[in-house]
Every structure is written in structure tokens, then in C-alpha cells.
Image: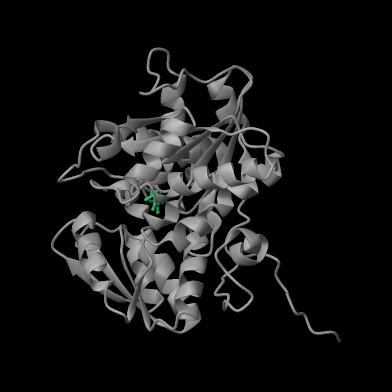
Length: 363
Ligand SMILES: *Cc1c(COP(=O)(O)O)cnc(C)c1O
């Protein structure tokens, strides 16, 4: 029997090698990330109306259940190539889950600095399961990133936060996939914004394929911050950011400039969504389209609903959703990451017979 040399064509580096900062000599540390589904959403399209077609890019289906894996495969591969002994990151949860997994895969150490008491339970479980060394600090994410920047200056560590350009390079792959699947860029692209690496990466990816004539158009980029954590929207650092959407609870984004450029160059906008709008959108998407995402991810869906309300167009030059638009919303992480964000009541226990069960389920 012939040996399988490449049993899986999946993986961001193998799929987009020529667009990434890797060479034939770079060891590829991959878990088959990327190639996530772009799901057509008929009910969401109907809610938007105006003949628009809405797609959801479901990034929760990456190996550690968030988009962070797209950048982490590149960042950890480069770290191994450079002979680094350990990766280190600050995290609101998903970066640490991803870094820990890819470090485990590579056989190197992973250190994680987290804001104490602020990490969704599913994400914390992942960091421990993959064997990372986890330190909680009495501070917020921005404090954690400051410490990591300081420690990252030491030769034994590679920082794998999105200040590492290899992360951004890998994350461009999501835009490439969308262009390949739609045959062009969408008219509008909506996504949540925290540290702003992802909006920076998508815009870089779209521009790259546009330059190479693989896309005729460029999308309008719309980024959404949580109302209590909206430094870019307010154009000032937020000292104590608050929101239920822990993955975007960031007061001093590292890629602030990248986000501003994406918004200005694409004639897009940055806007805010309130926590109750985020939770309503999370529930809407799960119960009407069958797509369960964590709260931060639902910010893009809440943002889409907001864009469609008359008189509530976001700031900057964006002038509303046009007739017949093709719209992509990135949903960044899986709903199981943050089970506590979903309220539910298990119906009261009933005696074990069919009539009682029928009555209990309301038939
Ligand atoms: C990291 C993350 C974000 C924010 O992305 P940035 O690149 O920091 O703007 C949003 N949602 C989820 C689920 C994340 O893990």
C-alpha cells in the first residue's frame, strides 16, 4: 500500500503557504485549522431583508474552537523554527487555549497570563488540559499583556499574542477562504473587535487577494465593540472595560491603528452593541439558524441587526445596508466555550410516563 504523504489537505499553512511568512524549511505545526464553513443563513437574510444574502463564517469549528488557531499555527511554527523554548501570551481565554494546544503539538512549553476571575470556564479548561502553565493576575487583560510584553523581551520566550505579526498573517486566511468560496469579496463584512488583530488581518487578506486580482471588489468593514469596552469607538483608552463578552473585554487594543485603517480605507465603521443586544443575538442565532457561538462572537450578529434599524447607522462614512448586498458575519468562537453565559431552566422532574412528558413539553 502506498504511504499517505499528505493525508489532510487542511491546515492554514499548507493551504496558503505562498501567502505566509514560511519557507520550505519551516516546521509546520498544525492541527488542521481553517477551512471553516461559510454557512448561508436564510432566516438571518430574511431578517435583514432588502434582497440581501447573509453568510456566517463559523470559526468555532477550528481545532480549539476559535479563529485564534489560524494565527497560532503560523506563530508556533515560526517559534519552533527559531528554536524558542516556550511561548507566552496574555489572554481573555481563547489565545491561551490555542497557544497551549499548538505548544503541546510542537512539544514546547506554554505560559499563560490571565486576568483572575475573568475567563470563561470552557477556555480555562482547555489551557489546563493542553498542559499550559497558567498564572492569574489581579488585573485586567491590558495589565496581562503589559507583563507579557516585558517577559517576551527575554530570549527564551516567543510572544504569541496578536502583536506577533505571524498571528495576523495566519488570520488573513479567513478572508482568502471567503473570497474563494464566494468568487469575490462580500459587499459587507461584520466582525467583533477586541484587541483588533482580526479586523486588521481580514482587511489585509482582502486587500492582498484584490491586488492579485483574485477578487474584483473590496468589502466595507464593520467592527463591533461591546458598549462597556469600546475604546476605538470612543477614541480613548478605557481603564476598566466591562462586558459579558469576555473575549472583547479590552480597553487598550494592540492593533488600534490597524483597525482604524481597515475602517477608513474600506469606508466602513466601528460601532457598539450593548450586552443585552449581544445575548439576544446569541440566542437568536442558536435557536433560528442552529449556530451556537460565544457572546463576543454574537456581537457581529447584534451589529447586523443594529445596522438594519432605521436611524441607527454606525459612525464614520457607512451609509447603511444596500439592496442585494452579500454580507458575511464572522462568528469567532464556539458557544460551548462559555456555558455560563446561557441561562436555562431544566423543566421540573416528572414521573416517568409518556403523558407527563408530553404535557411537560407543551404538546
Ligand atoms: C480574540 C477574540 C475576539 C477578538 O478578536 P481581536 O482580534 O482581539 O479583535 C473576538 N471573539 C473571540 C471569540 C475571540 O477569541
